[in-house]
Amino acid sequence: MNDLTRYPFEIRPLSQEEGGGYLISFPDFSECISDGESIGEAIANGFDALSETVAALTDMGLSAPKPGSAGGMNA
Image 1 (cartoon, rainbow, N blue to C red):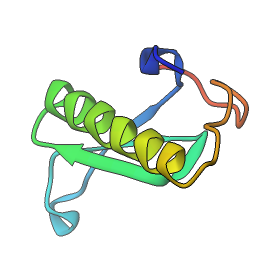
Image 2: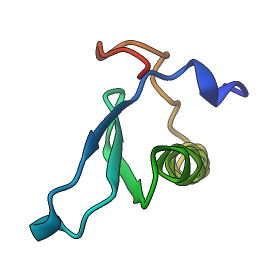
Image 3: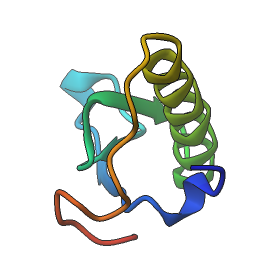
C-alpha cells in the first residue's frame, strides 16, 4: 500500500490535563496514534507514525489492512 492518505483517521482535541493539542488515530491500526500542537501538525505526525507502522508490519512479513477496513472517516 503506497498511498497512506487513503487510510481514514480521527482527530480529537486533547484536554489540558492530557497536555493540550490534538490526537490523531487510525481505526485500521489500533496501535498507531500520534499528536501535535495543531491539527496540521497532528496529521503530519500521524502519517509519519502510520508510515513507520506499515514498514514494521512489512518487516515482520505481515500485510497492512485495507484502507477503511475498520470503519471511520477522514476528518
